[in-house]
Amino acid sequence: MVNLPFQIIYVARPIHWVKNFALFGALLLTGTLFEKGLFKDVLLAFISFSFATSATYIFNDIMDAKADILHPVKKNRPVSSGKLPVIIAILELLSFLFLSLLIAFALNDLLFTLILFYFGLQALYSIGLKNIHVVDILIIATGFVLRVYAGAFVINAHLSVWFLLCVVSASLFLAAGKRRAEINLLEAEETRKSLSKYSKELLNSYVTMFGNATWMSWSLYTFFESPKAALPFWLALAELSRATTIDKLMMLTIPVVIFGIMRYEALIFEGKSEAPEKLLLTDKALLIAVGLWLTLVYWILYSGVSVSGI
Image 1: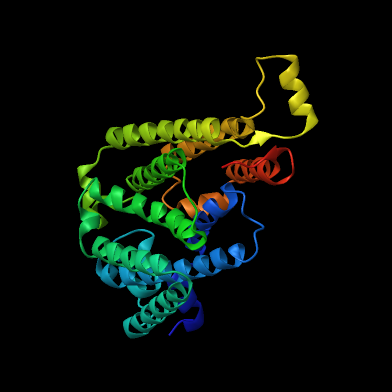
Image 2: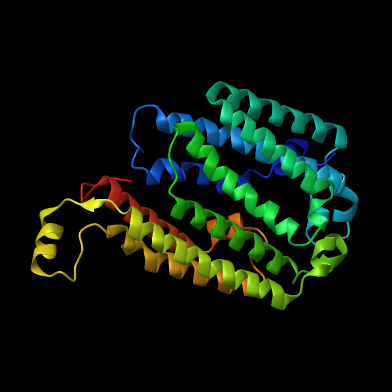
């Protein structure tokens, strides 16, 4: 048995937990980051969702073990390679799911229900829905949307319709990009039936469509939901010229979002986006874009340059 502790960690794919930082979206953008108790609640929800995420990946690996052997990359996963016994994988799955639901139940009834729904949907995906083209992309995207709502449920936050549209568009963009990268992999069509229904041209159009929808919906969000500026500099600027505005500061983030989408699309068409979480952790340009976006959002909402009204 090869390095069993490592295989137990590896099968849970903790690197994928980076996607669960989407739970902090509502907390950050509603200006409540420093309200007492809210950060702790979202952090616990993050842990709960991360355990649920690992449970779904283990379930998927168990169901796909035979097919993964044919895949150039997935054949090295703990279950398909035989390095992790199936019985241990099942016990690990049940442990993660139990801990996830236990934390969620203690936090919020809606979060508990959402995680149950998430796991059920992902289980159906692993059992067969992933083989139905278009449906597979919609389910992957739904997972991202549920993450954002999980964070909103915990703090009882209202989500702007424009932000919701942005989340949906970005989720579809990431899901379509994942499929577009997978189709470039050697023997991919043999291991994922839905890919045989897609052409590169069709997936290219999906990626382009959802990429455009993402930056447009974010732009509308920043236009309609920006807090009003408060510093004398912005107030004086507005007095000097009607062409300036003091309540659209979030629009400063639009160029950063457009750059991030353009960079990610470039990586998609190079076939490097099968695992979005790895790109977000390794691609320097994307890291800089995310860091700059977070800096601008924090500066606008929390540094005193504006009066939050979201």
